[in-house]
Length: 373
Image 1 (cartoon, rainbow, N blue to C red):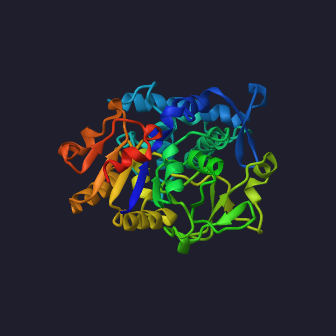
Image 2 (cartoon, rainbow, N blue to C red; image 1 turned 90 degrees about the vertical axis):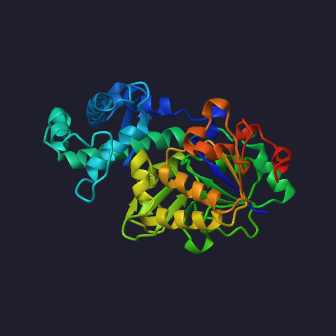
Image 3 (cartoon, rainbow, N blue to C red; image 1 turned 180 degrees about the horizontal axis):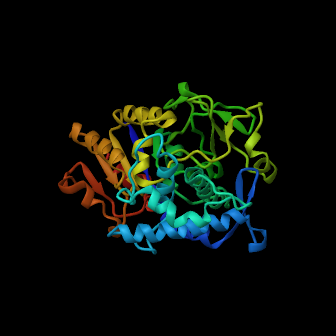
């Protein structure tokens, strides 16, 4: 019997290791300095790069526009994904149409409101599309800085450790771009396949042929939204790399990492922006990962779901189609009552195939899972 996991950002709630609100506040409240194409946090406004202050002014204007143009958004619940979402559309407007909360607003109108801030450090006007691209990079860098560091995790999701001890191999499909799982696996000595070539170099290349191969691994880790430690070779479609070590020295060399790769994108490669993800699933490395996700999901008998918000309609429809295809398949939900997914599952929530343990995944042990095998 094949068991797989689908994990969303909610898996971090019980340990409060990451906080979307804190990261979003940091974008406008903390001080950041541009260094080697990455933005590093600094202590005082005097050390902040002047352009960052202009970024913040434009971000504040966009926040006001989002609140004005949406019935559901307030200043309090807007997060960095909403912000990235807007600037990502602006910077891609010449390439393809993308939807966001400002879809009914003309980009020129927004540009006019922000015009006094869309200048370089010499006061020269910058093209709005280029300025939006820089803000997107800035937001990515802030997210990267908040998620990359942290202590080793000893008791994150004990169920994974129990799977290893019982010799139960499994696929993990995660929508998280942080490194909580990797840090936990490292702490517990859990061996996993992340689909990047093995080697001693801190920079490892994506290997298509290794995707979904368990062999001697305890888990296969599908990061369907990318990761804050992925970077991309801009000249080659499937040239993605993962960075394993995060010393300050390595971060300083981030734009021109080893092996003579001069075209590596120095921005972390992960998906964000609610609707944009659904478009990006069909491009580059993500299209391949989603195809393999569907393939391995169809080999799955039991899917354990936790932390997934169900608003990602592409992933949601894949899961529902998988569940509907065979009555012998089971979906075990690990949610507390206040995160009940019944709204999105509709009447399926009452199917005997669907079991809601009403617990977070970190509280569930293997014996509890075995009750439903």
